[in-house]
Picture (cartoon, rainbow, N blue to C red):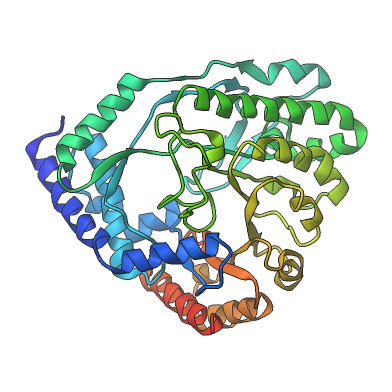
Length: 411
């Protein structure tokens, strides 16, 4: 339990979130996401996902007023929702809910080893921990997978007590995506993986396959443990838009037993950006088909280039949303995707980090991007601004420009 001081602060913030959630615009935004997730013609949705580093500039921890650790975590989430509503002109939907953690013990794999920068926000270097072919058996450490239901109940109960009558506690979604190829690049070293594709492809395929198979085992075990919760509403569809859909859950749904086929799934292989389509099929896509075949709808990709590998993505079962990063040729990707999937465009975030902010630069960039994607089911998702140079107006301006162009290019 938290003290009265912290409780009062949280309830005041929760009351504001409840007011926001009851604004009529929320229903219009929900319907927008429903429509694009059905592949219907609609106004281009805009979603701005503020990166953690950027939040440090927009809402530093010095604004927090609670003292208890758990209370501060909830306060931070509430203040961020309020800030986003009051400042950003995008299509986020605020629901009157508060999430609690469901503690899970996941199967163990060998941990990547990193050399960290002396700068807290700096890059780190991967240090290979799988160094020889004989290390193959060191990757999977155990298959233990369990849920701490008592811990989940405690997490839920204190939220029920604090937010009673204001926000409804719901279980936070578990990570059900997969990035096995990227993980293998961490433990083996990216240069080694690329060399292995030529020098020992059978061994590398077995290594990646073992990691994928354990991931498949894990999500199936979570289903068996009744640990899954629906992700078909306000949740971010991984790195894309919001997940509102009336196509999930699947037929025969039982609220007491959420199944994988009732959910959105996701995979990414960002480190595979430069490999050939043939290698991508052998070391990534064949495994993606097995994993994503478990889910009802799927999203795929992050920083990968899809403009020359779309024939592979078309083999993915139940695929609905494709991330098209700034590293793609937007026009070629538009021709390849057409109207068969959501074209989830991820524009560059570097302009907002320049020493001098030039809104017209992003206006021209976004305008050109929307021109070549005309006719596709486009959503604009900004996931990549890690700094606004301490100038929140840059973030606000970007959202206004994106929304202005979304309205204009939607006809």
